[in-house]
Image (cartoon, rainbow, N blue to C red; front, side, top):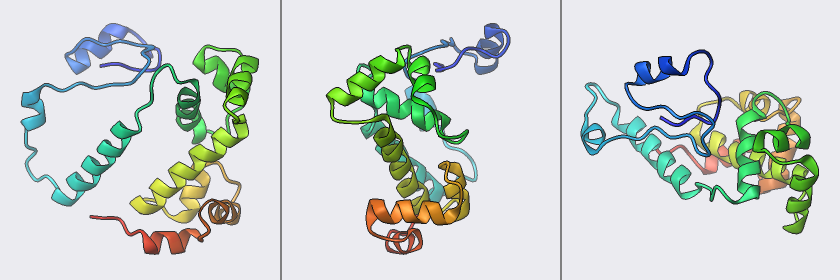
Length: 175
């Protein structure tokens, strides 16, 4: 097991719970499985849910960032804290182990601003959440840090050219 965070309490408790070696402050969170564990079948499994989760896992794997890519690391950090509110560049840089000015300069070198990173993460998550259909539009707006659903709807229309409801209707969840 590899976690991005520090242990809450004794690290040995984690190893005992997972019955596996545990690493904290890792570059990438991971929960490795053996081939026999992948072949394990759960009784009463939901085939539709399996297809959705498998598809999502493949998308996440394809989007998996290069750990040396500062822009991708910034996106991951923004996503990690987005549900708690819109992050600041200072907090994001500190979590990444770089200075705020360094992060700002490296983003600028790539023609980006920190605000654009936040906007891109919100757009990507909005599309995924709307297609998944697991949250209402107001819940999605709140989750992405918007003050209300109408602010979210305006941003979504700016990103996609469509209202969120129209986007959901045209991109149904494939279950």
